[in-house]
Length: 295
Image (cartoon, rainbow, N blue to C red; front, side, top):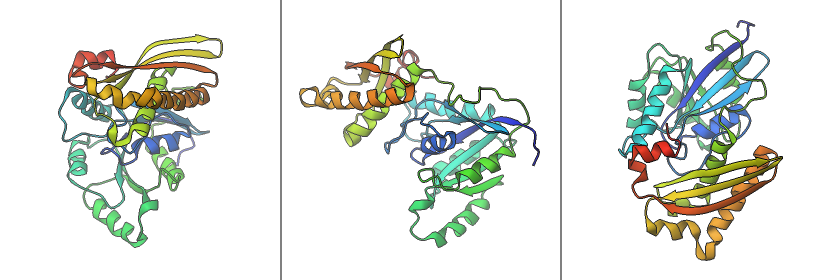
């Protein structure tokens, strides 16, 4: 392996809920992409950056490719995934151990032939019978000329060092694009919205309406204090009480959880004010999506 410094972009792709964001966070060593068990947690392409003595990895954490819902939001997310193929040096196709279906096969057909694809088999820690892993790897190896096949557990950190070492070989030689201590190219305003959206996903669980978003209406910094005004956008009037909860307790708890995480990430005090707004049909309105920062 060449000792020259290498820098490159790596797209992290796959179906919803296979662990793409968890893997990105693990590889970066910090939380730059939100996670939850609910599909479509990630709605934006997010660059996570990890720099070592001999390489800079720039991870593009994409939304899960959506095969069923066809509204404007999902069309934008799918466009985000496919456009990432053209802009990267390496593709990490993440699948869940033991699971390969039509969704993965469809993604495989879309991959550019010239870009090396590393197949990342995630959640190996959840496989009760480890003897099933090798036959699964053999089955997938026969489907496509993957550059590498790497079993990992993003949650436990198993195999992720080997993944980084394997990926480095496919990065082009060249200087770093970002500073050594950068972990993302997203600004604090964007990260604040993502943190609040994650807390909504985690606290509301199955009650969470699909048509929900976060809009940061004001972000001001005074020394180490950040004043953030955030609107939770829902699709219908009936969704407001779900988010707010009895006596406002649910939204208060969600906001407190988000504020504490923001303070940890930003390294300073946060004053966070949140409220709920209704924007009917926002997820199928491309102008509304652009105003909410969707690409």
